[in-house]
Amino acid sequence: MKSIASAPGKIILFGEHFVVYGMKAVLCSIDKRITATSQLIDERVIRIRSSLGESEINMDSSNNLEKVQQKFMKPFFYIAQKAIKENSAKNGIELVLESEIPQGVGLGSSSAACVAATASVNGLFYKLSKNDVMKIAVQAERTIFEQNSGADSSVSTFGGLVSYDLKKGFEDIPSRNDLSFIISNSAQVHNTQDVVRQVRNFKEKNDDLFNKLCKLEMNIVDNAMSSLKENDLNKLGSLMLENHDVLKQIGVSTEKIDLLVQEAKKTSYGAKITGAGGGGCIISLVDDSNSENTLNNLRKTSDCFVTKIDYSGLRYS
Ligand code: MEV
Image (cartoon, rainbow, N blue to C red; front, side):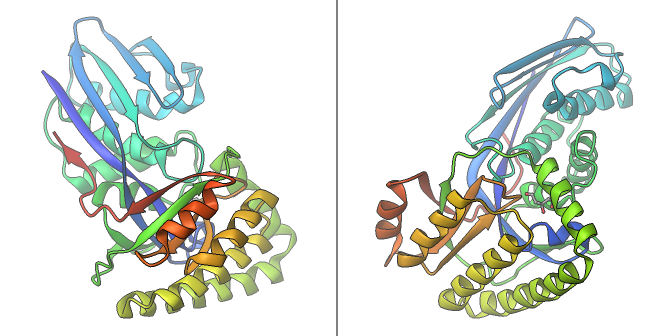
């Protein structure tokens, strides 16, 4: 029997990085997914194949997690090993991950992979609740990225447009706006953990400035929540540009990213980095009136595509 589950990637509309320090972020899942397919196998091994990094591991299921050589495979080994232990399984597990989400560019591919893998692997024994999937996915991701806020895995599990903070977790944004974004990829691959560490260094060296920026960010997020209620695209767009400016000040933008934002600004409602930055993607808020122009404009210098909010989150098939 095969157990198949898929989970969406995400974009952060407001609040990345500051969410790590307890502030609220606004994010949504997108219509690009990772599919995880698992099955029990006779050999007592964990075999993982992933299109995320064209990689494969085949290790004894009792091995220590630290023995997994490719770092990005650790969370999946953790998920499979945990399921084997908790279900006292005598078999091994084969897990295959296939992704539509570009990797390492701020679109939540690692979290979506952890969510899909958790649901698929545990589905071999019994179907976990979405809440349990989310908790295990966050633990799995923390095997390689301890400071991860859990925001990405939450939105990937539950889908939709949500706010998230460390204390309250995620909350649905009831206006269920039908927003469209253009995601434009700078092709500068980043490592989220490194960029988060870089921001921590910045904070330690510039405590006063960082506190000032936290207040600014809090204000942006509060205004964004009201603008979402009113579905005010002009206001949302200008708040995105303000947020980009704050992200620039904490040092996570790049020359290429700033150029893309400048270009996007000409035709869309507003644009900003999404996710960790240090490269990665920008998002531009559009609707039918300006989507085509923005797309044509950004296509000159980057790979881009239009995306809409995915309201389904984790899916079993
Ligand atoms: C990464 O998509 C978002 C960050 O805020 C890190 C996190 O929330 O774990 C940069």
